[in-house]
Length: 139
Image (cartoon, rainbow, N blue to C red; front, side):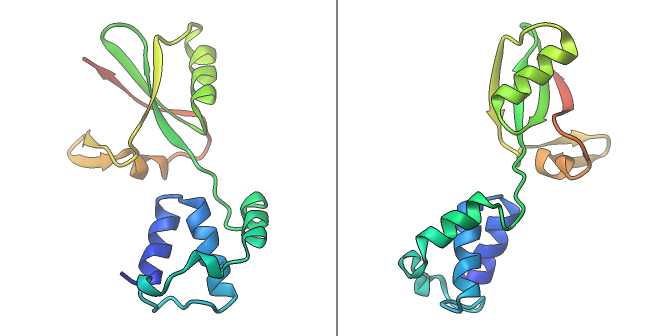
């Protein structure tokens, strides 16, 4: 695998720390996009600079996860939010009750929507404001 493949994956899957390390090493010309991962060594990085980059969110990450909140024994709602606390708060505001539980789900989970297969990751691109309801599931 090449550095460029790992870099693209780190951006796609929102791996902030890894993406910032790669960005730093590329900017410092300690690696190139065409290098093989066997040449990748985190010890070449200035860890303080990378920590500052992560703190300042140089790459502009705005991580949003998907949470399954149990409404009752049969019904669930999926909510996009930054963290479980935000998902629960949004649920309480929307439904005027407390959810039975709240669990993070996989953004890459695929399901049928209309005639197409879609993942939560793809759905998230369609939404502009978070937190937001992604959909409902009845057991």
